[in-house]
Image 1: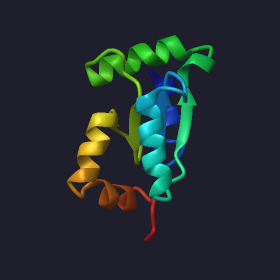
Image 2: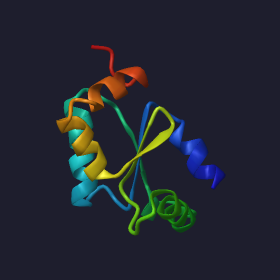
Image 3: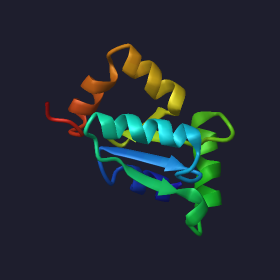
Image 4: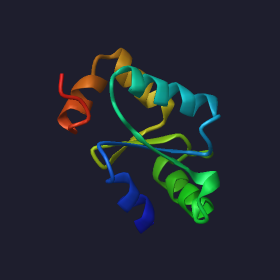
Length: 104
């Protein structure tokens, strides 16, 4: 879906979530915030085309529910499990720096 592609390129880190109260979404937004990354969060339940975007994300991720879905540098990285795995493996910060989301 063109809308997801366009929105995912808005900023270095973009998170699609059902709503900000979702525990998994809270986990990743808190992680990024703690790293000094200002992510854009799109709450699909508040978007008139949210259902269509959710279906597109489910297709891309191969899972349902597909949220949270995290894009870094305009590329789909995955969901909370993938982000935490990258962080624990020391690969998230270099990825964020390469995308221009972090400078230090």
